Amino acid sequence: MSSMKNVISLFSGALGLDLGLEKAGFVLRAAIECNQFAIQTIKENRRHLRTKKLVLIDKRVSLKNVGVICEEILKKTRLKKSGRYVLAGAPPCQPFSTAGKRASLKDSRSCGFQIFLKAIRILRPKFFVIENVKGILSAAKKHRPLAKRGPGFPQLTREEEHGSWFKELLDDLNELCDDIGYCVTWGLINSADYGAPQVRERVIFIGSLDGYFVWPEATHSKGGNNGTKKWVALRKGLKGLKDKEPAYKEFSEESSNYLKLIPEGSNWHALPKNLQPKAIGAAFKSWGGRAGFLRRLSWTKLAPTITNNPKTKATMLCHPTKTRPLSVRECARIQQFPDDWSFSGSTAAQYRQIGNATPLGIGESIGDAIRNVEDNGTNELYPKKLYCADPALLERIINSPKTMLNPPRMRKIKGIEQARSWLNGRANKRTDFEKYEAISPKEAAVGFK
Image 1 (cartoon, helix red, strand yellow):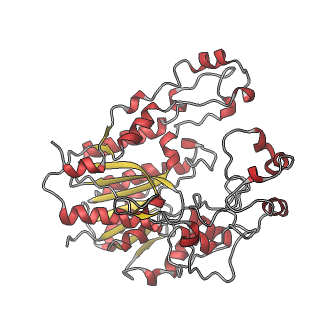
Image 2 (cartoon, helix red, strand yellow; image 1 turned 135 degrees about the vertical axis):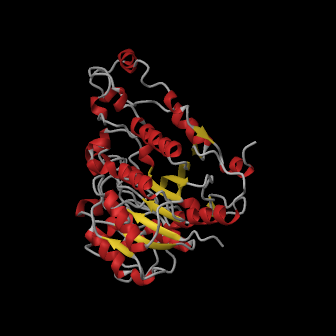
Image 3 (cartoon, rainbow, N blue to C red; image 1 turned 180 degrees about the vertical axis):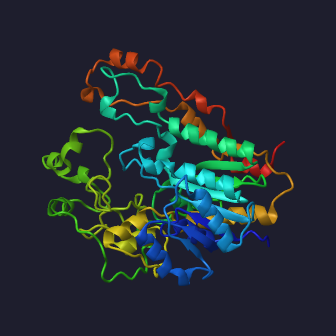
């Protein structure tokens, strides 16, 4: 067995990613978190962790102090730079979440990635793991609201094009490969493929200083094929949960009245036609699926992504048979937290900790993948470059538009020819992503020819 077993956690939250790594045999040695409720959660559950010698740093990390904090971690844990440990974390995702305002780099929290990359350069861990929302794939450096795109408005700048921020992030990771010598693998995964009873797509980056191509192997699939188990539906996912006095925030009286008319597995579309406009308000004249409005879950299907507030208007998570949001403990179970893992703070604070966490199955599978290459790695290491672990994903990114417009009825100027003229090539494929390389895990297992 290798000596690779320690974890340093940055932006730790309630420790979802870290608990998953611990399930794979790792030991959490240090956690850095500034949210007081998350800090209290860590302290109250310390007995669950493999070691009681956890260094908990209660500070807000920034680009200015990350160096000092890294030195403090090394001193208190007695770990070394370039040591055999994992640096893991999920930088704040609100700037890039499709459920948020998509402020991108206008949001000060977006510097969380720069903080993480700086910590990598200082600590030079043998492995690092970064988890974040799917929205970063299309994140722009500067966000232009849909209502201000199209004929009658200035054309987009390159900073406003979809993916401009993400391309900059990949360039920064490329520099890590060139400057320090990391092999970095990235891609999009679904938590359902790792045993969670929910659809939750997340972007993962895994770096190896030794040059290993590391990617987590799915444990589940929709049909349970190729040695995997079937996806876990909500009923099975919540089976055996003891939640006699569920904690939750009540829906408004108006929402509750509408939800009583909606059957299991349906949403506002199930309401009588005459009630729909008032039921979802201004969103009725919007476009897109609006699937989260007045949504009642189904026992026989996966839950949608667990958010940090299950009663919000556009991302509602109503219990399949009761007219209430999913409870704190139900959300925690869906995120794969142990049933006896307690959360501190108000009900709202507990929801936020759970919704911002990484499902444990993802962390466990990543940990298993790291241990596998450490214990059984071949002598043929990969060139220390940046690789997408899904060629089809990279192809989709390359061929996706650089911007999108509201439908004609919602535009300032509605003519199709005017829209085409305004786009002026901006909706063509993102050729600037063509320089990146993609290798599937199966190809990587064979090795370079």
